[in-house]
Length: 434
Picture (cartoon, one colour):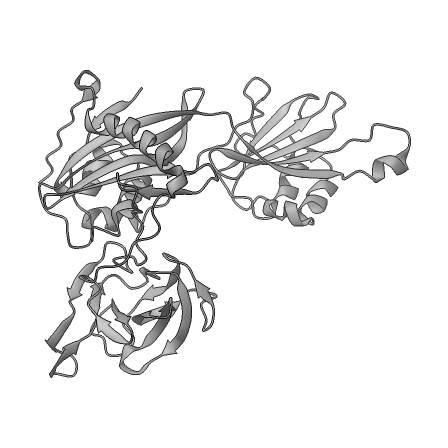
């Protein structure tokens, strides 16, 4: 059953200010609740916690705790942490995170046979520990002692419907309505190749979307993908539908099957403010003379991540005169992009390395001839500067013809839910936050 919410929303500036200082809350993992026995560690914890054979032990990891410290607390075999983390597949247990829950299982013979650690809200990393079953030690030693796997929880998926109109602040409206921030981020990403969310939003713009929510035994575990979305910007309607083909390839497409993903992102810095546009004649604030401005400036706080606007190969990393710290990327031969006045580069970014669209390359700064923190971004086609705000970028590949019927069937079902919500199930929540 779809849940209905009405979300009043506005500009993204306040939302991003909040988002930059926030972090994603982690969801505690759990195993089969019919088998699990919670063992309280107390506060402060006792030096040793007594457990019973056959129990599931659930331990909330505390700051600075290692797997070895936790094993000592429960009087478990101290050799296991060293052996497990020394293996290639087990090294992810070297850096366990505070706040997450580790689970251990003891057999009726009081032997440890399983460890589980949450990778995310829906998946556990599981270590199965073999126990000798014969008197022939040589045979047992030939078997792998530790087996590693990832186990997905048996969760329920529910579709959630939300809708809203732009009035003042998208962040405040989303917060008051309980709309997950990652879902708003997804919506911005889906339409990011067609709508410049840094400058293009207007009061009266509106959106509606359906997204997945994962639940286990009535408890929310997390959010999934946006299933379908519509955004009306300045009277123009944009729609996107999530489709996964039989080979497992997933993407967002228009109702006609065209990809929503452009070959270039519209903006290299998410939700920043444009402080200077592409111009043939602009007064330079430092040089004090009129000259062409062959790029777009994005004002943003120092340290704001800068992302590559397309797949490509890095051609230059380093100081570049008045540009200061600069990265230049070549894309598909004809195209290139330049990112200037950076404060620093992401670790691993170097000349000759490949880069993916949306991947972080560095951070906003004010190096070179800059009056304050901002990114100077240039876009070139055949070595000619072009305005990245108005250039018509080509789109990625559409839905393959052999999957067209399956896609059209999917769109027919989902678009009906998106366009005609049941009024009897819609909870109207009108938030005017001017």
